[in-house]
Length: 136
Image 1 (tube, rainbow, N blue to C red):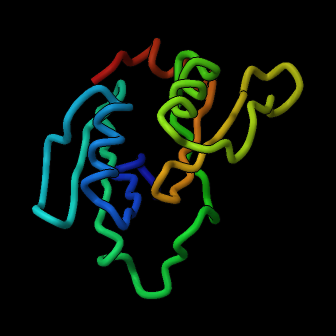
Image 2 (image 1 turned 90 degrees about the vertical axis):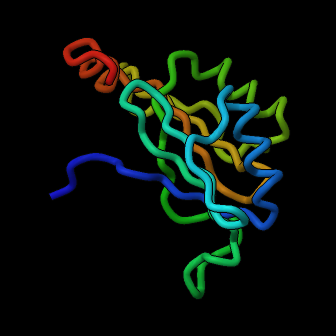
């Protein structure tokens, strides 16, 4: 049974540039590093782990461009977060899109400068759970 997102992993050819870019966007340095191979941050209300791996260590046959699943991060201000990512050099992948009439679920996504899709979401369910349990 799935219990929760443990670590979301992205790959980058230029690991140092990716570390610098995400440090700028997230406003904090990685808490864990493996020289030349990996950086990891703990972010958000529940300290979800987000890692960037040197693409040399990607699984054989891994796709080097956007595609597949999109993990959507809950955000407080979708438009402001999207605009910040675009200012930092991300490119729009999917514009701000309401998902279901009147539900309050709204998504958008970008491709970071390293070829990874970063999803954003206004998510009433997330807000409800956070209100009940509080951040970690």
